[in-house]
Amino acid sequence: MLLGTPTADSSRLYALTVTSGDPAWAGALAGVALGLPVYHITEDEVKAQLAAADYEQQVALMESVMDVAGIGEAVRGVREGKG
Amino acid sequence: MDLKGKKIIALGERDGIQGSAIAQCAKGAGAEVVLEKTYCFV
Image (cartoon, rainbow over all chains, first blue to last red; front, side, top):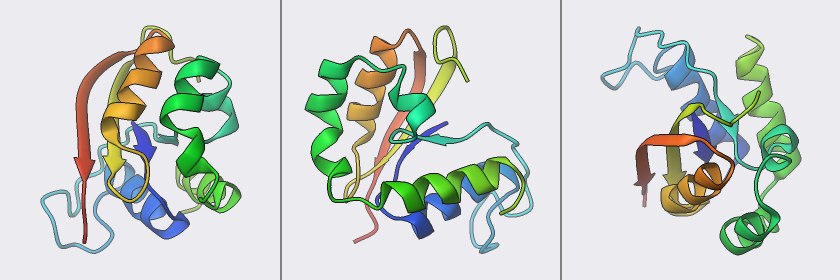
């Protein structure tokens, strides 16, 4: 699962929803632990695999106004089971 | 995590990065995009 969410909070919410289930218990995935590996497209280990031209054209502009470090920390935390 | 050959769900957000942009980048890295969505919460 590759995310393009704009904030750390939304990234954590999406990531939790597709790993351990909807944390708000509001949607269809409440209590459903899909356990999908989840990454944000701006994380270094993903970014390093993408074509530089694609990244520059599709992602770079939004990346410049996003809290990339906070988003990465949030998604990595979910991946490592720290929520 | 190696994207090449992996099946990918590209989940974008209108106020962030669009699903189509994620999909294009992932395809370029050799991944197979099985679902692409862009959500909007405004």
